[in-house]
Image (cartoon, rainbow, N blue to C red):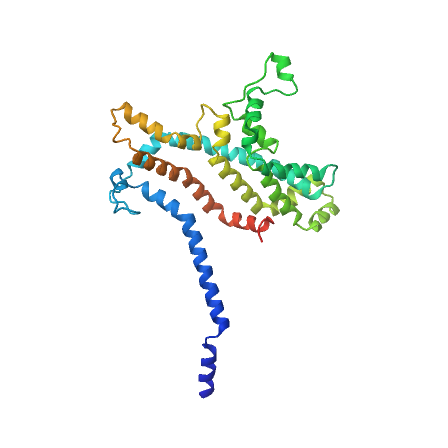
Length: 324
């Protein structure tokens, strides 16, 4: 009996080692909670403001919970953004461009990971360079290139003039095909690291069985790369969905989600002014409320998409070679 009590006291005895472990766990918990709060707090504020009446914005007693709960903000924002039409257009554009980028980046990354050819290091250095150079630096050359598009003077020789691709989807398609789309350098790097981490024995076994390089890539490598492909697709979709730089550069008269969101306050103001709205009603607080509501409506599809693909996304990040 005495022996059991002694063992019990030793087991629960507070030692410097246990104090250090408890202190370390406490510090980690505080850091994690702080990071989560920093990330989620702005989103929670936008969500709470989107359900507030305008009078709540000027009530000092209202912080996060609305006193005058309303759905009218979403109705006005949907009308001001022409939401469902813009949503469908942006979803088709983002999905198709992301799939095209994924296909091209897969082939490019596999070539860098498995084949030897002259200038390989130089070309991969150019890929890394695309991640470093800001797109604003090449904004004017990009615009002029697609405003007066030509291929070795062929169009001008045949038709007498170049082709204007501005306000069409062709600039996005051409950039995706040539691995110059949004963050394509990052996608190639991630996929290259993934393919380099795969054992060569898989390919060698396929070659012994008579498979060619293309068949080995399609039947052996691609099925193993599904989590990484989902990750790259999600990155591409999210960046294309939220892109405002290229959308404003190439699409002057065609609205996508980012451009519709940026002009939401102006559209709502014009709507209410046209129906006799007063400047007191279209106040800075109302504009802020509309912008917060529009932001929630813009990012909600992305949150749903992430929840659907989160398992493959996390696995792809872990196997990409970027973390750890």
